[in-house]
Length: 335
Image (cartoon, rainbow, N blue to C red):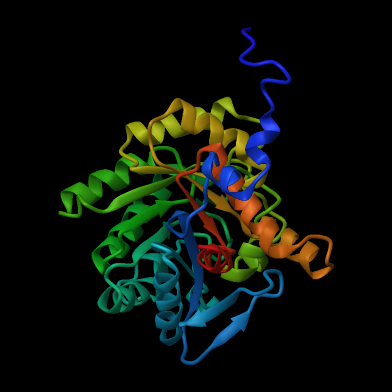
């Protein structure tokens, strides 16, 4: 190993001594354009419901979506991800509400595209908000997740959202082969420009609890897990295989989820594959940090920027985070 420099001629602290030089040599920089803001929506008018396990995050009715969209655009956030809170009477074993053309998500897509066509709209393809059992796929009488049968439903869901105007379909279910089937369906339906963001490396994690509260699947799922289809958190090579398969099947972008405990996966994916790689800083990560902020154990603004910049340093192209609005405000004020 060659020695590039030797003390006292090489003093790395010289570059850190002043603000201007620190900024000139920064290797990773966080911008508002790197952020995606998740929004939980529900039926009704003039409604906003706080999510106890996600401090500062609300479910909002459709008529309150425009104000959120305007705030995102004002702050330079290019896209939002829409997640539904479905009334219990609409949940079924087969999740058929997920492909209802007049359902909550299609209505939200049409509203936002009509008024804010420049805002990117990302919609999940998964069944957990819509099913009585809270799983991402269909379940047989033995409690087994049915892979191929689930894909048929996901294709219906993807086409429903794409026809409504969604820019990005994001299958987050982890069924084998679903990216190829969805891509085929989009191509044959003259929706070839609809992007697919594949949740390729989605791990069976303990960090999803607050999200399940937000979409109303906590009680339906109960104590059951998702280990038979989500990745084992011990496995990195398997995650890379999943990413590779989704790329072969037609994914335009891939997602690593969760974020902070999986920076090694983000780094490995970006080094192995030349494809935009997104990361989801999930609900449990957000809630954990918010608890530390509430107790004054950490300084919020600096910590948020540090954590999100860590995702960029690991190689992430974009970050889906509940801190998006706050981070964008911090970035804007520092400019």
